[in-house]
Image: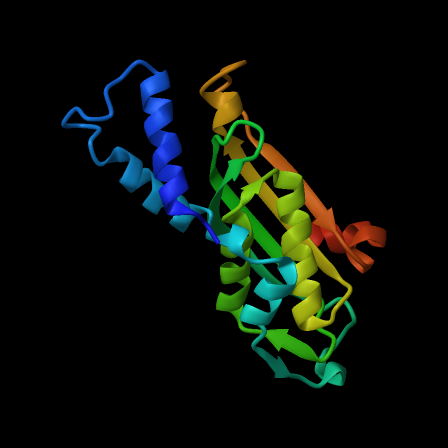
Amino acid sequence: MIDEKAIEKHIRGILEALGDDPEREGLKDTPKRVAKMYSEVFEGMNYTNDEIAEMFNKTFEDDPDSYQSSNDMVIVKDIEIFSYCEHHMALMYNMTASVAYIPRGKVIGLSKIARIADMAAKRLQIQERLGADIAEIIQKITESPDVAVIIEASHSCMTARGISKPSAKTRTRTLRGRFETDEKLAERVMG
């Protein structure tokens, strides 16, 4: 579990290391506010992928023969999420995830897909692993090997510091099962 008291102590130390006075009016409650914020934005760190899968494992049985083609799929696009880069603890923002899977007898509630993306993002992450985490959780719940996750984001560690390229975006593709081997199927998710 996230230790808010330890976070408060360390944020206070960071403020002092920056040469500021943590007792001044504007900063007096900052360590407590940051600790509370970290508990919220890093909530996903409290759970493994298996635990997240169990948390959102609400599926509906569906007849796999009811699909007209083995290329029928479910796609949820442009799920707005955010995360923090584990290298600089910098915000990954303007982030959207698109998740697709080919049903194999189980379908998951659409809001659960968004909740999974959100919870997996609430960790110190790298974008590549975030896509892999979402794909793994969706596979566990739907029991479908065929999952694709496309994420696009701006990284403040690149846009606001270092090379300072504010318009740079990063796009990652995580392809599992048939999405890995069938480029036309993967393109349908990208389109």
